[in-house]
Image 1: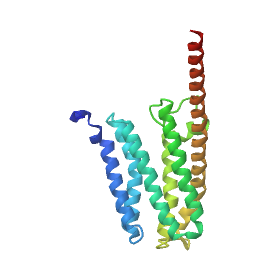
Image 2: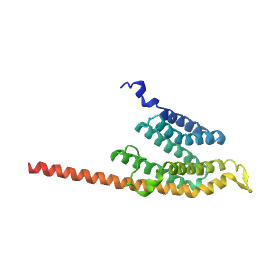
Image 3: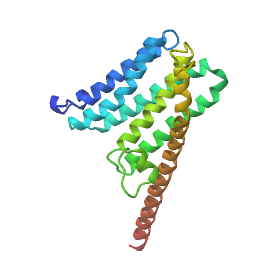
Image 4: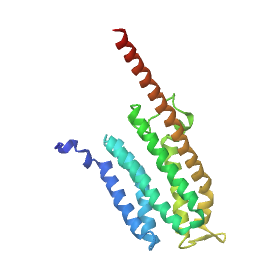
Length: 224
């Protein structure tokens, strides 16, 4: 179906930024095992643009379900690409990277799909009836901070494989960043598990409501 130019969501500004993020992520993947400077910068810029597309969507009134899905998939795939590389660089910690990938993908996918099922306008939309952890986490500044420190943790591990970088009091700056951000990266993974818990409760509620409606319809037919 042809879409009028002014309604072509594929050309909305935040979605164009999303395509740029994909290109940067692909370049990062290509150089990830050979050139940490190119890969690191491309990955970091792609991650930072995650905040920019949200501002663009609000500024231009161009928030779309397609954009939300594009943003979510780019985030998950970008992080997975980096963690696969980290698993190769730090094989002794492979299980933890695998676990982190599984939690990240499964929990966010379940939460986002459940948001669609229950009729939310966005997976980030919360109200007073929501779980308090979700309400706090999806405050704009909190979400941005948590995503940034999480990326800083994994990027610092990546760069440390190649270089210690600048020293601060005789200690690698990247190692300091990794140590400081590690607890918050673990916290973010736990919050992802909370996503799955909340989504499971909501989805079970939908199932229960639909089963009750089905029984009511069947009872109504029997009484006719």
